[in-house]
Image (cartoon, rainbow over the protein chains, first blue to last red):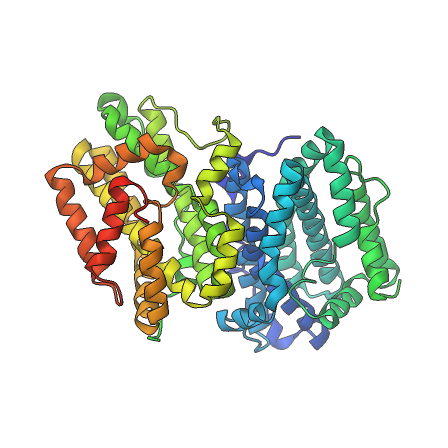
Length: 264
Length: 271
């Protein structure tokens, strides 16, 4: 089904939590491990604008629908960061602009070269490269939804669960955009399928890998995706990805967990 | 550097979304806008909506590291999206066919070259390495000058159209944009004052920018028409003089830098 961009932009709002009793965290705080995962999630959400930059270096930005989507998407994700930061603040963990800037500074050269690499690849491969970005985006959004659902299940904290449910609901609309874009582009071109398959199987890593230490990634994946339940969730994401045209058999999430040594 | 006063969190929290409910589009049936005014509004919609292309040019440089600046830009793009939407609705209500929206025909290659304004992401990213942190001051200055130009455009349109319905909308739009200008002005001033390198780079960038930002997408003729409409005639002279004075008054800039912007406006990039 085609994604209705006008409807999406007209109904895009920042996630709200005014009605949630965050004070409840004072009496029923999250444990250190969960807070570390939450901090990771907040970083990823705040960083969305930096992924936008990579997406924008490819030809896709010239399309009005993509541009409109990205404007709203960026803002929604920024507010997810703010919402998670509000929960962290109840645990006396401050995520301010200086802290975010410091973590962006740690990225160093790899991050500096990213837009160049992306742009060169984009112009070499041409418009089929957009399919890679859209599929990549879909994989990341599916992972994000799964991560929020797992977090809600594991922590059994009603206030947190409700906030994460609201965030995941918005992520579901992002999935709808990315999958509709990706499906169309993959279905239209076997070259796009081949390039996307290659890029995902070779380069995909869990969301946030490029902006966090391997220790942090391993912590979050172990927290959320280990054990039979975690694996089942990972398999579900893989099933969604491999259901796209030309991507059957891909198991990038499970492969990534194996690569990190996350116990099944 | 001077401490920053602008509250980005408050700005993000109180962002202005769609203006559609306040447009009162039925009023144009009885009092339609002049053709040249509709064309200028159409061009302004394209410029206001060109945020993603601009973000790309900005975010491939060290500016993307500054989380406060990127937080501002996220909301800035959102508000400009809805300004562009309002302008397109007014154009359509006056019998125009707004450009730059879903289904609008455009030659992809041309558009891409136009959006990069002669310098693609690779060149900008490489330049960003050498420019380092002062490049943030450059981007803030460019954003500020662009805001000043568009403010002049809205003022000129309001005077030329003498239409109550449009007047009310333009006042709303200028209110929304006032916060953008305030942020850019504060950031440009403190960064230019703190770094002679930023001021030097800003002088260079002002001289070679195609003004207004995003106008390469319009095509040469439409861009020239827009500039003539805003800065032509004796009223335009007053607005141009104000722009020149405002630029020259920024720390580290001078009349020469200001003149380079006006030269660029008159005939494309000066350098």
